[in-house]
Image (cartoon, rainbow, N blue to C red; front, side, top):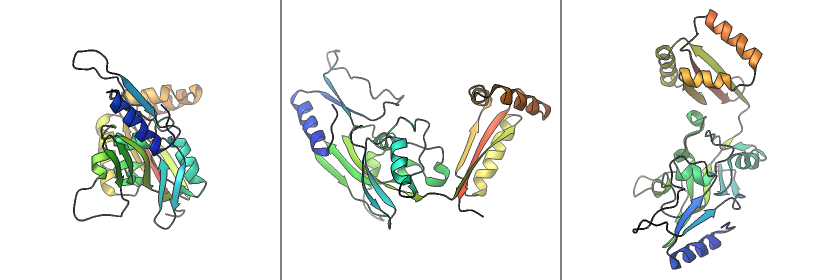
Length: 261
């Protein structure tokens, strides 16, 4: 099913209840956790299942420039979300490896982490509120800066894998587009030296946007997939000359912000 509103999601939940069907919220389908699999009934057979594809609910619903909050349909994909924000001079800055195919609702349901979470935060820092259609009714999670008392309802939704219901729209904390971004790859002869460097950078709190350490296998894989055969071959020769041959590890470092900082 391809709902286009929260009301239609409620209709689908009611339909599933009448027919004792399993409801599986579907975002980008990039999950590797197995929760998209059809479940079995008590007698061992497959239960009737309804896959609810949220891809048609992808528009920006509101943009609060003063509070730097934006509300989207939960089915918006990563590139679509960023394109809509960048048209207004903002970014969410959340780039999981599945960015091109995964959705905002999926990020929240799986407690996602992005490539630049060091600067912009993981999805739990970015998720400010939203609406979930559950079998028992609509759950509204209000948007407020912080609270010193009570249960944080957002924590019930984050990482829930769709168990509570279908997230129909979500409000996220956004940032102004940085004036510059720079990314660098630093090579180390072995894992121990690479870990030591990564730890030193992380503990220095330099305001980096990305700090990602690749082991030897990941490093070799990334270089093999780069698609720049002659350049990579020259790089490999240079690294061997610098005692970074077999067993070398790569540290990816990113920085963004205002020019001159």
